[in-house]
Image (cartoon, rainbow, N blue to C red; front, side, top):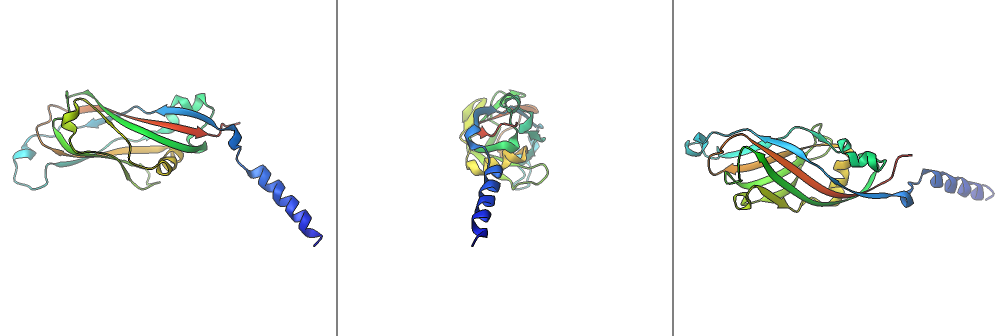
Length: 187
């Protein structure tokens, strides 16, 4: 019984030194700006006889949250993020087209370039043609899923759509995601 008080004292000391300093959390917004390239699809797929040939899946290059200046400004890293609030996704045509009239049933996914997390859907836009050259969508993934992605740092987009009219050219898009983060600053 004499050992019990010493054991409790050691347990309390160890837990006090291993606890995260949640009272020092910094809260800040981040906004990604990722360029995504859609190579021109020839309109012959609209007239050929192969069923389902008009559905496309385009995978972007990889991006990193750690490249964002806001992490350096707030003395934190993606690995020190403790909570995430996903706000929205904005897709804007940068060049190559004036609107999304070429596509329908557009679904955007986020995946890991190195398979560190499972791919998940972030937005579904059934009729992007009616959106002009900018689409704003509330991201459908939950905040815990985003916390895992931000902690892993690297991500990419996969966009599926059905071609409904000819693409005017290859298209460059800007995918912007807005988040509110809480992170523990590095010492």
